[in-house]
Image (cartoon, rainbow, N blue to C red):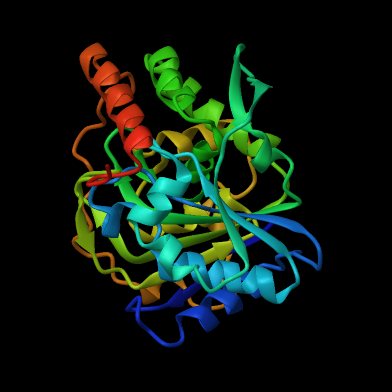
Length: 312
């Protein structure tokens, strides 16, 4: 079985055709959003650091919103960041301002529902995500110090509510395969999704917050997020051994993990130059050092209470 992945060159975020390219890609995936559907547009709003590079770019999120609105959908834009809330991070990244003229709601992915995991235990996934009719997943192409890369599949981990993500790092941190399976469990529990990956300017060398820009000029979309990720892994010249999520998805037999099974109706990976893209040399431990874990939780609480840097 083949899986379609749609790629398009977009070199700048101020490209006048960006919104049209976003619509073209989402249309090409067969995104089934219709009139009255409750659509969650789920960006990556990881943390209030290096936001121009670490978070989904507002122009790409706006393109996804315009597509859903053009279909008559009721659109909510939400995430559960590592620090603060979705609303705070949307303001700090400029996303709220970019969406101000659109009839969309900006929210936080809260109201956890206990999801049973394949390896035992539960994790709290936002009811807003679980109860949506469709999720348009807008990920940023970034290196990740603990997981190699964060693309479409990893971005669904943001549907886990608040501090529960940090707790998952602590609880599952000794077993990278089990952590990857947990993310795949979250994906499997969600309603139908369509993914759009922002690789116009990617992050390399480190991540998910403190890497460096890499101008790849890529916007990609697919109905199958695993296939979309695999296409990008292959484009970057990687092998499953370097990316725990890819390796675990393959072990579980998920469709879309084999590059030879991917079809490219639009542009092909060879059209994109990834020469010089640098992956992390060695993956960092998943579990945070206890002092860092506590400090991180305190910083997140302070950001939430203050409403963002510089707020009183």
